[in-house]
Image (cartoon, rainbow, N blue to C red; front, side, top):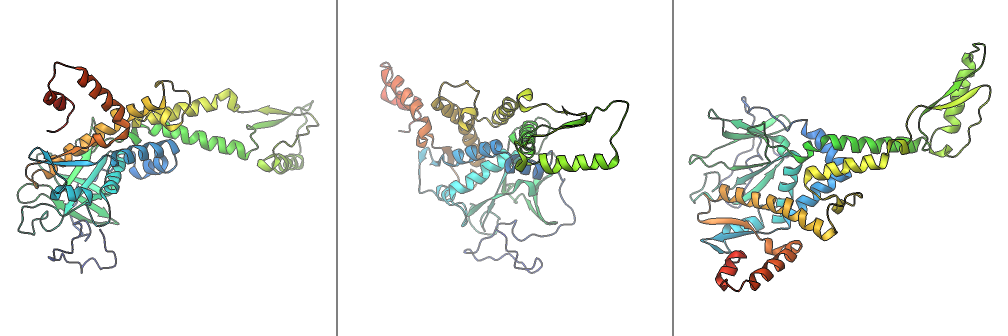
Length: 395
């Protein structure tokens, strides 16, 4: 999307149809910006601590994004599915750099980490520079941490501002009122313009899980021994001299600290006694606590813990039930939400079309489809047309 080799002042938009650029590519500096509102609790730190350093959150985001991207988006024109429609070709290859599945994976991933996902439509037609009906030629997913909503007087967004390294470009509504940016967001109870991400909802559990891992690593570095103190219990108020204290501390550090000294016995003399100053992993129920934090993270994302290999959860009888619940409760609502948003956004540019997820192509949902067909086949009071309609089959 961006050509950083060209100087900013020398960039000009070309009218050649074969050369299309995202409007956020040539970054133009504005003296007046939108209202700066990044994702609460600092998106960069949430992404770093959650997605970047927590295996459970990382796997949840990847599972949801990859599963959602594996569901094809079908285009229906005048009630009939068509794979030759310009919109179908656009969704299959939204831009020169990405396939449809790769583009959707980035869209769903941004939605899970930031609570917001942005898609920009570009091309001569979409930006009003052409003579056609305004249908876009390319779709680009933009990073949510670089995007700002510019609210209008009525409270609704009148534009979006995309910023990189202190430079920004404003993307506003076209003359016919169409917005070239689609803002897909998750529900937020206290914000009018930005969504609330599962990563933020799971932030406390992620902190606990990460702290557990860091504590466990520190414990292993200390030969798996909890911290404690050597207590000098000499009589008559006798105290160690400075030289004795420093020698004892050096001996403990060199001979008993670190993994290389694991298992080495400690010899105490002269009234010295070892007093533990922290709980042991058994006292803390360390493993159970870490698994509880992992289950809370999975709960925030809507991923059954069984699919992540987290023990101690018997909600589902087997892996198949957990996988079906994951698809029905998390993936299917997400892809339907996205398909509906794309229909509402692009419907004005491609007349008479509707975008729907092709759930028939999902192997994980096939057992439920087979059970539905078995029930409909056993219903002798229904006609074939009624059965097909109840099963959601066209024709």
